Image 1: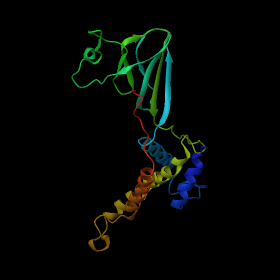
Image 2: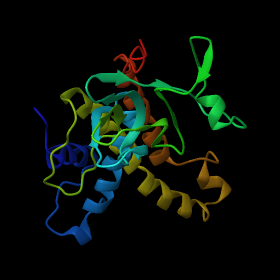
Image 3: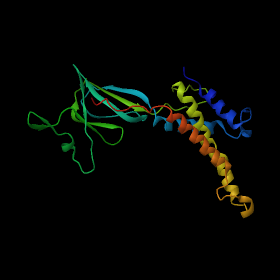
Image 4: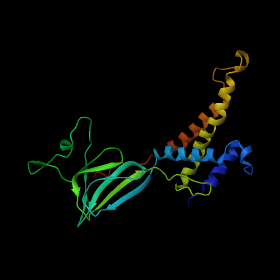
Length: 229
């Protein structure tokens, strides 16, 4: 069952000892701060495990390209569904390569372009042969997790992600007092400054990030291969 952002946010704030929220002018970490942290945490954790999405489009006219939603992260299968489903073949567009060479395939000893696509720019799929009107383009892809817009929003993540997300938010939260400490460090003398990087908040931020990394290391990363077969 998904949890609310408010519930996870409060878990973070209890660690930060900043749970009194009645007067936002008196809090150390505002709601806007916390939304920044969870947004960055959701982007970061997607590199380990992303959401799975399906783009589907049917067009009145033939199309040469489709652009995926802005949550696109990595590509899975691309297929066209007409009288039957046809899985298209991906070809990389390397620097200096021509589109013709990208789409070349050998069929019966003849070079031809068929059922081939390439991606350029990122997030835009281009077809070497136009998709007929009325056919459906289906793209299975991995995406970033849905953004959190407000305190009452529900996090669309599996339960196991809650703990690493908490530690990543804590890691980012400690940047705020670290910046203040760094500014004050300009006025320290050699005697009271100690180590040149005497910033306990920064070290705590690093600890929180290590805890996040440790939790993810205990779980296998998402397998994004094998669909080509």
